[in-house]
Image (tube, rainbow, N blue to C red; front, side, top):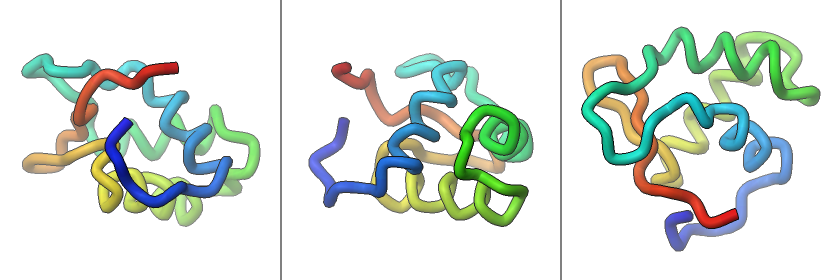
Length: 79
């Protein structure tokens, strides 16, 4: 994980739900699809607004990055 301030547990959990975003590969995940995954998979996410917040925080923190509406994992995560 990038060396960034600690995110709330539910947002860190959201990162784990986005494992389908490949690390270091040219393909990514559409931003809308990433929000959809978060709405379905993360218990504290209660709709698109929460999913958008989680995705924004992951992007702002450098855990993910986006180019032209496609989300990419910044690097491999050590679990």
